Length: 308
Image (cartoon, rainbow, N blue to C red):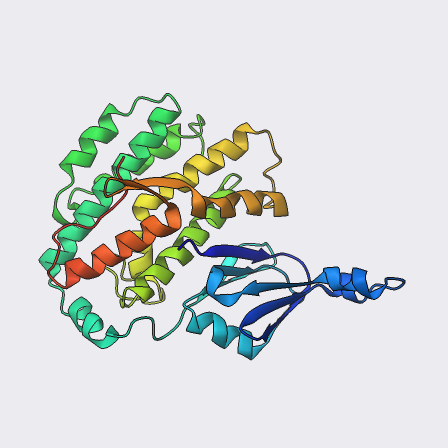
C-alpha cells in the first residue's frame, strides 16, 4: 500500500479522534461572519493508517501528544522544518518490527567485509543513476558508466567522489555549480527533496527491523540516521531529475514555495523500476530496505536497488 506524504505549511491544530487525524485550520474556523457549514470546511480528517510521512513546516502548528503517539505507532516518519522551511528533524518509532531484537543483533554483528561489499553495491548503483540523469540531459556519460563497473569493495578508490565532481559540473549545464547545504539555488530544492527521501528510507529501515543509526559507511557520531543516509544514495538522482524538471518549467526557485514543496513531495509516487517491476518510489524504498535486512541476515548477497 502506498502511504501518503502530507505537508502542513499553514497554522493548523492537529488532534486525534476515533483513530483519525483531525486537521483544524483556525484561519477558517475562527473567521467572523461564517455560518456553521462554512466553518466545517476548515476541519478535515485523514486516516492515520494512510500516512507514511508527515512534514511540519510552520511555527504555528499545534500537535497533541496523542497524535504523535498514534503516528509513531503506525510507523509514520515525522519531519520538522526550520524558519527557512528546510527539514531539521526526523522522528521515528522505537519499535518498528516484531522481531526487532533479532534483527538488531544481525545488523550489529555484520562483518566489515560484508559492509564494504554493500557499500560497493550502493556506490555502483548511485553512479549508474547519475549516469542515467546525465544521459537524460544529453551529457556524455561513458566515463560514469565505466566508473560504476570499477567500484571496488568499500569504494577504496573513491570513485563516488570522482563521479560527483563530473556530475555536478554537468547535470545543470553550469560548470560553476557548487553542491552544498548553504549554497545558491537549486541547492534549496535538492536539500528539501533529499530530506523527504531520507525520511522515507529511515521509516522503511525501521519497519524492516533495523537501526537507522548504524551505517555501513557513514559513521558520524552526531548523525542518528547513518544507515538511512547510506542506503538512500542511489535514490538521489530521482530528486535531481525532479529538480531539473522544475527548473525547466521556469518557476521561481529562489525559495521553496508551497507549490514547489507540493511538486517535490510528488517524488514519493515517481515510478521506479526495481527487481523487474515498476513501483512508486515509496514501495521501491521498502523493497530496498527489506533487502538490506536480508543481507544482514545472510539470506541475500546483494541489496535490491533501482534498475537503471
